[in-house]
Image 1: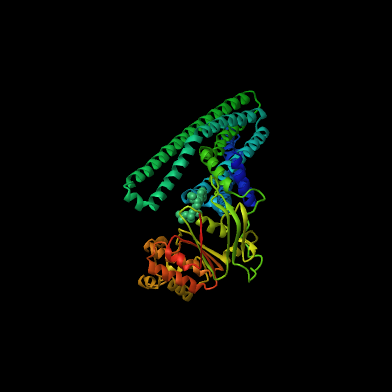
Image 2: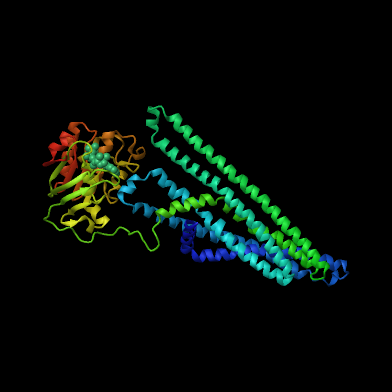
Length: 553
Ligand SMILES: Nc1ncnc2c1ncn2[C@@H]1O[C@H](COP(=O)(O)OP(=O)(O)OP(=O)(O)O)[C@@H](O)[C@H]1O
């Protein structure tokens, strides 16, 4: 519940004025509904009684009928305004929450980020935030309007009829309805949670199926994965059916409660009429007002049936939201230009152990890299070459030692400043974009065609690009229609686009034949003659290309 309140506070804080106005209109809608039915009941009964008493001619029909029309029209207008304001305000605050969530995700440490599963994170951002719209629209606003209307109904009925009748109506109605709503919330919690879990599993399994379809086909597991998708979908439907059945049962119980409350109000009103405390028209007013109170509980019924889903969504979302007073820093510009004439990269006495790992993978590692120099890290698989590159790139922080970029500790540079000076090509890259040009523009949105063609020439991709219809020809998603070697060369070209002072390469020519690999390595140097290059390499071609070799053991 704490999580729901926190999300509600966020929604309220971001759209306070619209939500206050919308809640006021929601109260007006329900109050006018109660007044409309109560007044109509009183009007018909009073007119009938006046007719029976033979004084029908003196009965003023104009004022009550004008009030009935005013209430009917006012209710429609208030309903329209309420929907417009509350839905608009909720959707706007959910958009803000989604952006805050995305910022929260991006601000996570590299290690945590690399452990996140894409499909699950997408669910957080989309499905969970969608589930939160009911918190304001189907729980908070209806609950506030119900309480205000019950108090108002009690006060007005006590004034217009009798305090005993007013007290009985509001008390019996509130207790009966309250019991049904608590029952609904308790029984719907588990199926609503299970339905949401099954929906998320369904989405994740479909994404896994699409992403790994080639491997699933090769290993003959496509039917199993498809069956897993169907199972999740069936489970979702079963649980959604269960919540629907519960909601309908709750509707039946609410109708019975309202009827019981209205019936007893009629009986009590009759008894008060017999004692001469109130008139028949006043008793009718009480009876119809009780029937009208039923309108206050319909939205709450839906909201409470979804409570389990909203609670889980609020809990998951809250974990990723910045805490109160904690703002995620926006990337800023570098604080100071990097001074010239120093080693481009210095690593001194570095020690690092991956979180949860038993052994320290990097111990007392030091390196000095001059501008224009190329150093290759060599050593058996698992010795920590990629880890050194990630440390140098500032993606993870060493437990001991210091890393300087042209004399400045990495920690002194802002994210933007650091990325402007240094580029890192990991072992596996994602090629985002629909054309060669788009893919390169990810590294520099200002890139022009000449520069794009130059870096593509440097990595021996000019012929491929021309053969595919040029820089802007449409490609398959993530470069799927390109060979492995072509994708690798494109990733290298993208790293060159930024003209970094320090270039970190993790097996840049993996998947290329030796002559192409040598051409690409030569091209990298031609494009960046003064860059300091640190590369993790198993291949002879890369080790020969380097000025110096550091063996990791
Ligand atoms: N996030 C991580 N959590 C725990 N251990 C990790 C993590 N990343 C890497 N390791 C471990 O750290 C060790 C060094 O990994 P690293 O990728 O740096 O080796 P490498 O020398 O680059 O290997 P390769 O040549 O195969 O790429 C390995 O034993 C690896 O399993």
